Image: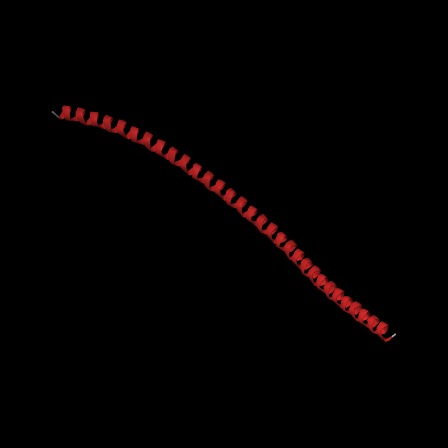
Length: 115
């Protein structure tokens, strides 16, 4: 009976050893998959960081372009305002000249009437 029990224990030890070897193999596979997943996650984080940096740089370029465009628009508006002011001055000068012509015609008419 003792020999049968020893044989049974030996069989169980062999089975447990095989199960342990299988578990070790599975553990190695899981560790390998985990390592690959970590590498993939790191690569994805690096790619995302590159994308974010590129987006930030594009945004900075857009902001710079917008600032230049705003400056050009401001200059164009200033020039348009100055041109408008010059046109107003020219209209005032024309109106003054027309008054002078009218006064000169009136004076000429008076002079003809007196002559």
